[in-house]
Length: 145
Image (cartoon, rainbow, N blue to C red; front, side, top):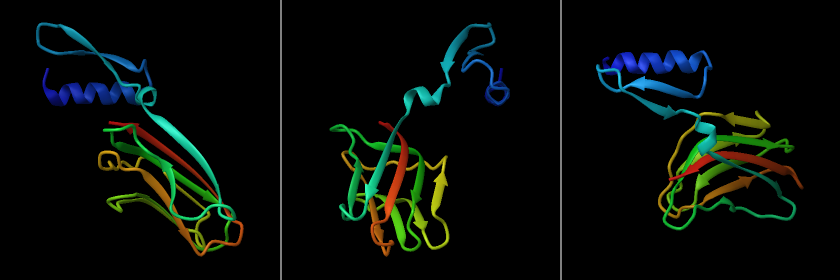
């Protein structure tokens, strides 16, 4: 069975939401291996509420275990502010993961965004121009790699 056929089989099985473990032939003699495709079982999430009346930017929301990297899988930002900007980025590299322009959108959902930070690099939230006493709620789905 060719590589394209295996990919097609996996895509078809996953789209039909069958069992998250799929048997896939590895050669033409009919031998099988089991692939665990339950990605949520290997991901984590961190929910953080930030009260901007008591906290100041940058605010560290996630630090990987020593020697590891954060590999984001999804980012969600919510606020009760009427103005300003909120940015989620990696602390050392400055790589921006998500940004909310609050005067236009009070919520930003990026369910399938994937960025990898450097080894030992934390993830931070920065904000500016928010309403006085605004709150920010952030959820980051990630893996440590």
